[in-house]
Length: 338
Image 1 (cartoon, rainbow, N blue to C red):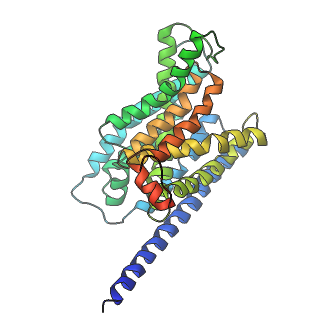
Image 2 (cartoon, one colour):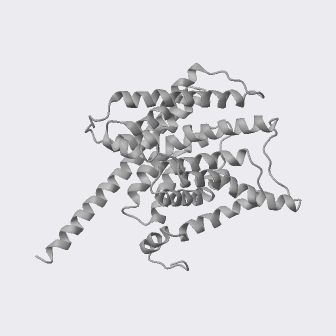
Image 3 (tube, rainbow, N blue to C red):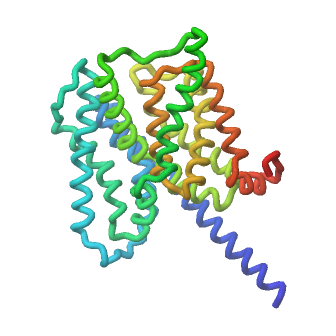
């Protein structure tokens, strides 16, 4: 009897790990199928750029499909979700309309594009899913839609800090900085920057992070080390961008692809894992960081060689408490901080 219990426990663990692995593989296949089908169709039909955002929702949609419990919670009324959907749809439509309007004009016009309501539906639908009657969908998206906390603030401020501190030091010594184009007054620049960040949050972070971190990383961490789990998220995440990288107006060369999708994306994936775990599995935190890394290098001055500090940042994430115990125990190594 004493020898049977561990065998049964191991059997249960193996079965659970196999299920999580199957979910992870199914997620990757579904995310690729949804995104690539929509992207390649839009590209072949020569649709305008805003409609490529439909394909960007593949990771979030795949995560929602696989999180669906099919057991509705009747305590939540449909009216609640539809109210939230309508409330979120308006700002999503405003943000995407102004983003593409201001990209083609010098001023700050306020014209809304009725054709962009379609792409705006996706982030509004995903965000309102936090009030879904399905328990699985609601549990996933409540980690995206919650009251902002200190980790949300850290995620927002981290990239400006990363860029501006080295830039300020180099500026004092007369060094050369990469500066964004001058777009007029400080008010105009700040307003454009706010819309650009809002676009990256709603149409990049919200559409990707529920899948890559909220679903895939969450499951991989139960079976593999944090570092290996991060790399197993990075690889499909990098390859997932291929249609956009290949068919963009100026396609990526192999060298540019390796620089962006390998050299810099690996440490960024490590930092995203660190933010995800330190914030208590908050998808909101990683979505804000994701939006920041896509926004601030285009609106703030920076010292280009200082980008090498991204590897120092990633090394700190690997060796930082409280994650260090998990990272090192699973990797079988020791560190100076342990």
